[in-house]
Image (cartoon, rainbow over all chains, first blue to last red; front, side):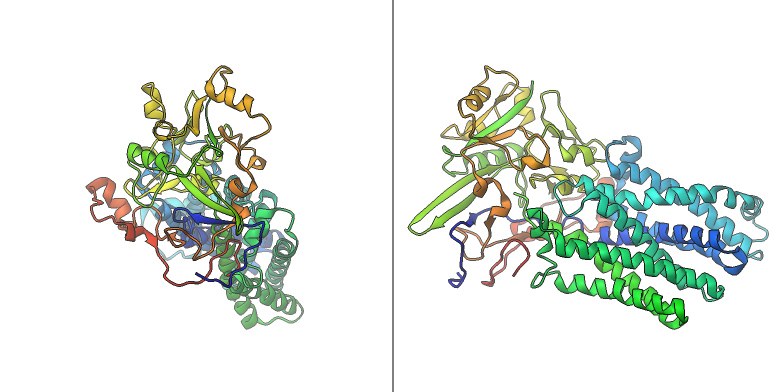
Length: 316
Length: 253
């Protein structure tokens, strides 16, 4: 027994209880959210770039954007499935959907989104690589549908918004965890998509025009700035709700997630912000790629921290 | 009919009879509980007291677990019980994240969520829940809260002003009431767990969710080819630290 521990006279002490649950949603859900942010983010940022620039200025965007999205959406779906304790029953979401659950609504939307992205990836890739599968009947059929890419793109962009944000509603429905409030999480999810969407496209923007890359830097700087601002608002000023305050103690000084949280803030937000701001004045491709990588790492750490700390508090 | 529970904490003596009865009746596996009795000490020597708080599912009228369940495995019965269908559950643990009372666990034998059902199977047969029958001091009172002549309704009327629910600010409308409770006993943030102050156990944390012996691959294969749980032991689930490091709630170590 630690006889040096001082217990306040008004404080009660638990003297007999069962084992506390550990982390319920762990690294797989973090990876799930992170991958989904990339999968939807590249579409949102890609749409912004196509609105601002001619597609000739970004020669590989038409196939690279859906391809990145396709890869990360599949990572997201794979880890969603693997995290289930009864993965074969995933089909129940489609056979017995419960529409008040954001998990259900999200699963349906994400499935539709992934199907459309798969089609766009196939069309975009085969159009960009005319020598690939020239004699394949399926490839010919897909190439004939080339115009369909532009037809469905606006709908895909529209769908990317709820697909990226529905996890915030799942977190809001997790009533036990007060840290996750719907308004803040919705905006954070959206900003996260713009952060890693721009970061991912920075890594493949080598042959783009300087103006297009400047816009990428602008999106990155703006999204990390506002996301960082929201984290700081929660970090310093969430003292109204007792449970939120107790949760944030894990990231405050001496908290067990303090180092991870600030590593996330430095890597994912502070470094990319200053590099992106600098790159808008005088471009440095190497530094921008470095910023893109730190953004991707930093967002993962931030998501992991924010997912796990509310699970550390005993609920009963 | 709306079935509810009331625990008179002034009567409860912490014998854990209800806890054991629940374990036996529902065959609750190792590392899991549907009903537990928590001991909480208050005050400074020599003016100290020990409080006992039985904790179980609150069968909320506005249940967050029911709302978040993607496949309606958690559902309401006509009598107000929040029931669970293990055959439909996909094991997403959304309900565990949503329940503000930490009353849901992942059954390590079935790899599905489970919880107190107010012994729905016994009620269907006209019996009382096992914990009610086992209580030697009748601290557990169970019945129809919409029937003003029922024992529980009369008890609530007789103790007006002293009847509480846990976390009313969550707007879950629990159908589980406490008489004689206070902030120290009902609010988990009002008390601390400090290593070395436990009666018979250290502060322990579950190492696993669900069956620790089933790998991710086995989660896919077991439903098809079957599996076994013969090797499940207490040590498989619970992390038992031996150091004296104090563990305080709220993040600071």
